[in-house]
Image 1 (cartoon, rainbow, N blue to C red):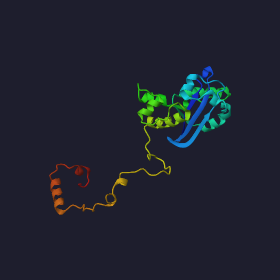
Image 2: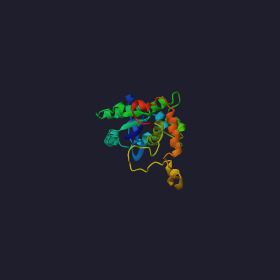
Image 3: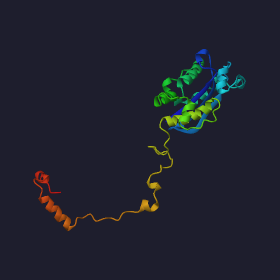
Image 4: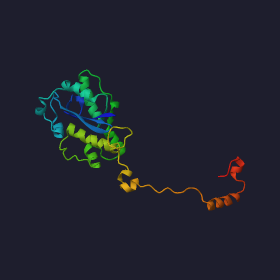
Length: 235
């Protein structure tokens, strides 16, 4: 199962007010394991970045001036997404901005049901608790000390780890398919060689004459045994 973990940074909070995407970070996961394939790009938004947003992500107008336009990167971006499920923290925000950019170019928007919202997942799993990315990193003991400012690629890497914890944590080796990975360690693997290979000496299972006599005496004391009613031999 291929999924793409995704994050964006923007010029402001509302695409309906003309705000644009200025950074995209994405990474590929297959069967909930990052493959190492990533997509990262800075984008010239063709407008100024709100000062409040600069305080969050640190991306200035001067830094973005020589970056490509969204129209220049859209084909590569959509090719990386493919038809995979998108794992996004607060999916409505990022999907809203992505679709606003696509519609600006006359392209079809991405359906919301392609996204898995980890914010909603965290809130359902931990009702009443803070569910932003920093809080979830603290909850799951994920090191986010390098996150001085928001950044699409940094946040995507952290979100991938948070996502795995939200769905139960990674349990390596537990797979129903042969992926060529090493076999999981079993209890027998941890036993000493002698304990794992020694066999108990076979025992004699035939009843002795004394045991047969005692059994016969016990059977003769039974009244109306079931095997006589069924026409079978005694046990």
